Image (cartoon, rainbow, N blue to C red; front, side, top):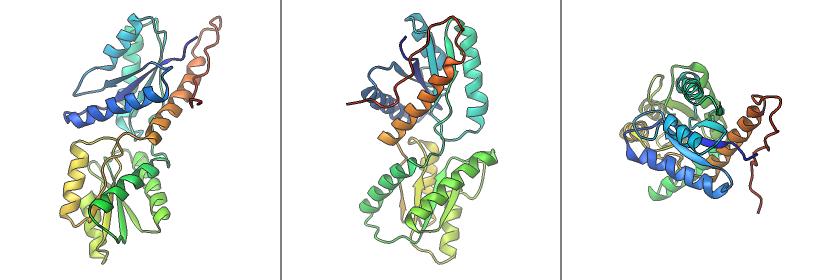
Length: 264
C-alpha cells in the first residue's frame, strides 16, 4: 500500500505572502519526500479549500489522507475548525479514510529558526547589544495555548541568558508594544522582538510596527520556510499515519508505515 496523502491545512490570509509561504513549504516538503502526495489547502480567504483538494485526491483513487493543520497553537482553530473539516470531509467522501494530525505546536526546534531570523535582523540593523527579548505570537483566549508559548519563551531566554517576555497581538496581553515599553521602563534599552509566526501577514506586520514604535531595536521576520518546520510537519504526519492504521478494517492489508526521514 502507498503512504497516505498529506493535505496541509493552513489558516489562510488575504495577504498573498501568507499563501506564497505555504506553497513554498509544500514545495520544500515535496523535495524532501518525493514519494508522498502533498497538497496545500486553506480554511479561509484563499483557494483551494480542503474539500476541493480531498475531492481531487478521491477522484484520482487515493484511499487515505492525513490532514495536517499548519498551526502553531492548539487553540480554537485546532479544536473547532479542523475537526469540523475532517467530519465534513468524511461525510462527503465516505470511501476515504481521513485523519487529522496534531498541530505543529511550539516545538523547541523552532527556536533554531527564530535565532537565524533574529541574527539576520540584528546584522541588517547593525545591532550589537541586547539586554532583553520579547517573543511575539498571535495569542489566544485559550490560556493553555498561551502558556505553551510562555514555556518556549523561557527556553529562548535561557539560550541567550537574557530576560524574556511573551507578547500577544490579540486575545491576550501584554501586546508586543507593551512588552517592549515595560522593558524600557525598567532601563533596558536594547530590546529585540522575535516573531513567532509561520508566515507574513496582518498580525506579524502589526507586531513589528507597534514594537518598533515602542522602541524595539530589532524585530525578526516570521519563521517562514525552513528545514526545521518541514521536518516537524513530516513528524506530525508520520504519527498520524500510524494512528490511521487503527481506523483500518480488520480484513484490510496492513498499510506501510510512512517514512519519516528520507535516506540518501
